[in-house]
Length: 326
Image (cartoon, rainbow, N blue to C red; front, top):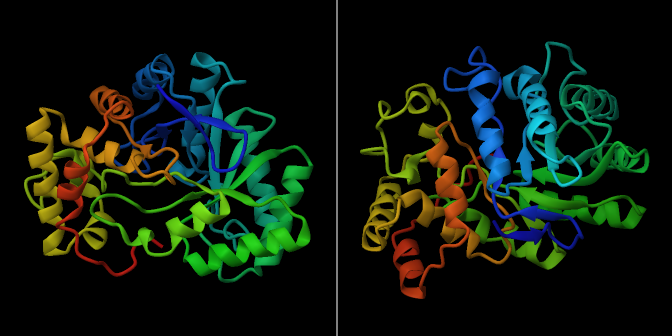
């Protein structure tokens, strides 16, 4: 495993982040592994040198945080682990159990700390921007958590570049803790982040930790077409993928990936992740794993160096998309 600083911070993380949305309870999503079935993934991740783990308070309605916290305390050295979670999406039916108000941020953080079984969250992220709450209220509430020692670093997830730039500016003007990471939608099939968000992050020293680096399985090489909904349990029940990856040209990217992978005699997933890791602004893709080989492939991708002509071949078929994933 290789390690890197998260943006312009001193925080060192593994170049692969294990996304823990897949671990919790299948009552939430059919493809989610329960606590017992998830244990081998945490154990193997630690054995492979993975130190970066990402979850959210809404995954499995909080059970993902519970499972993640218990597993890491069991298998990992907590002083070395970088544990990340997120706040924004509803966690109950109440009006104040969602969004980025001071009230919800404060009570959601307390609830996450208890579920994770830790005193401090290493990276606390806003899952989306909240159009119903002034950004100043959100940022001051997050800064207070840092000052109280409940959170060490702050991160954001998918937003428009202008929103993120504004947030960084408001924090800087007020002397508040700034976002140090951006968890955005970025992969070979969806590259619109290259227009504004990635240059902004590079200029501001923000580490990029992309979600869906394999396009929800599309870049793993298991699907037969864009509309294949039978290859995996997740594909059968995933209602989000059809709205993210539905342009005819998307499959041209998949075919280009397969050709490069076949020439290298390397699984497509490894090549797709290696492409992401070749981008200087990318710190660590967030990978989901429901089979141990998924995890093994991701870790092997860290050492895979693509040649310029391979990168050119992978990128050539791309066609612009409307903005998606917000």
